Length: 341
Image (cartoon, rainbow, N blue to C red; front, side, top):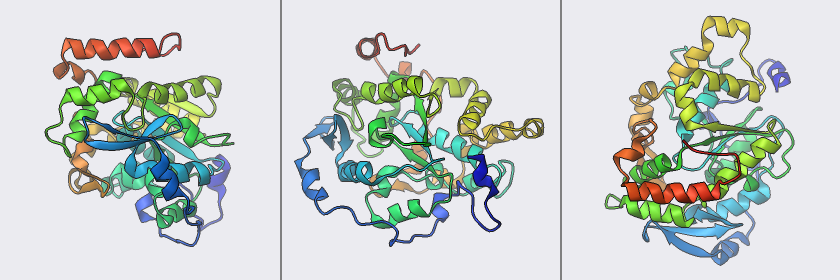
């Protein structure tokens, strides 16, 4: 990856803010014509007490509006050497990790302490492309092809849909304590469905029929890959990011092949990145406090920045709710080496 920094003068070195990339729709072939029929043939169900349509593809439930894109993504996405993919189950720390990954990898072009840093004018999701969105349109997929290396991308897809035998591609996965994830998901969905009950979200998660679920299969896919191929998959925990953001940023930098030099350490670059990407710094910015996240997901961007803490589940779940989820998680993760405190 370091060799890419020796590109000729005038050649952009990634990652760059995705929102600033110009589109060339001629770079990528159109989605195969058979996809609409295949999408319609996928098993369907509803999540959150009938509030969201989902479809099952290769053992995972996906939002109906992303199901065809998932098929296209798996068939057409070809990870390149030096690609880095930030992955997570929804509401597990995605936005924060996106910001940390972008600030870490792009620090040579965009020093974290600079007043003009892209994260000061753009939402983290505008800096890093979301793969599910890209493969819904030729124009967006063409922008992916136009990105300079190393490319930095984001997804909620399970591992098997993005990285089958991808030589040189690296994945950084963030996992969150399941009860906190459920509560965060509930608050997020209430922006679209104000009457949605926490019990309805818990029921869907526990049944497995939830967007990108079953959650345990999603997490374990990345967990096992991180053990089998630690050079290719870095498994992070949201709670550990909260406890030691600087240490995890250093781990991230080493993993992607861009470790901090002694000079950077002495200059406080790690601390600059942690400060830039901190919850308290990002939340009040205009790019994160105004506007809508996505036309497909009509929620305000501010919904991505609620509390940024661990243990908030205790303020919302009954003991019975917590016990129900804990028992399922204990069973699903038994003998895997992965536990939640």
